[in-house]
Every structure is written in structure tokens, then in C-alpha cells.
Image 1 (tube, rainbow, N blue to C red):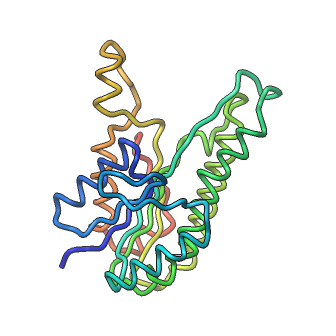
Image 2: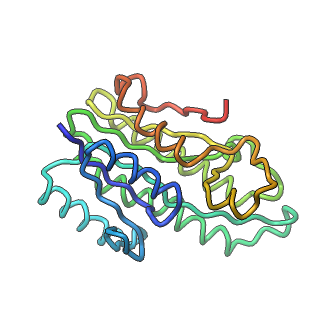
Length: 217
């Protein structure tokens, strides 16, 4: 039976790669981003009411959800710690944390009811090893991880799981074409990321739930 997979943040190369992967597998993919286009639903994931309406729509149209891949991202850095802009923190809080909170809160009941559900975010090494130049970004990623682990605790004993995939950074064909001389050492290709997301369904939910899976190793 095909799965119902919601992918949030499909305006990015990683989002498109994940949508492509699950579509090729024959799953029902619900693509969501802020602006819509390319078959995606236009939803502001920072708007809690809009996300609750999305969850109600998914349940009404499909009866369930078997996976949520949360790929809403963003990055801001600074040259020094004292030069960190709290405006950057506000931006990253909205993108990396608030969207995650809204989506997980609205869809947790559907995940709990799934016969084989997964919730996944993509985090970064920076969350565990912040530097003076990425304080806002690292703190936002760390908060997103903590929130996801709380969801994992809520899913204990169910047939669903919440997990964190950890990368250094992502690369795609467009980036390589723009910088043909760059090696992108340590980067994770977006197609490899999509395969890693898919592989979460190959393991027992209890083995996946609450895990930080390092894709850089």
C-alpha cells in the first residue's frame, strides 16, 4: 500500500529531491511550501491556524498521514560572536523552530494513528558544536532537535517514530554547476538525503525513534 507523505519546504533542492524520491516509489506526496507552485500547496507554516487547517485537509482527503519530512530551512551567520544579529535569531526562530512546532503539534494525532509513520527533520553538526560565528543558527538547530526529541517521546509505544538526520551541509547539481572547481567535501548530496529519509521506513520504529542519525560519518 502506498504511503501518504507530507513534505514541508519543497521550494528547496532537498525538498524537490525528497518529493521526487517518494513520487518515484508510488507514494502519495503532499508538497507544501510558502509560495506554492510546481504542484505544491501554498501554506505559511509559521501560521498555526493555517497548519491546523492543512492537517484537517490531509485527514479529510487521505484519512491518514504516514510520514512528515520537515525541510523548512534557513541560515544566518556573523563574523564575530558580538556581531550576532538578534534579527537573524528572530528570522531563524520562525523558519527553523516555529514551523516545526506548528507542524508537529497539528499532525501528531495523525502520526500516532499511523500504522507505520515517520517524522524527520534535517539538522546540522553545528547544533552540537556551535562556533562564535553561527550562534543564532546553531541555537535554532539545537532547539529544533530538542523539540523533535520531545515528539519522539510522545510517539513511544506507537507504530510511528520521530528522527533527526544530521549533516554538515547539502549540495545539489545546481551548486556543482555553478562552482565546478569546488569539491564540497563533507557535504551530503540531496539525492542521498532523500534515500536516507526513505530508509527510515526500513527499520522498526522503536529503533528509529529519538535517534540522531549522522549522515556525515
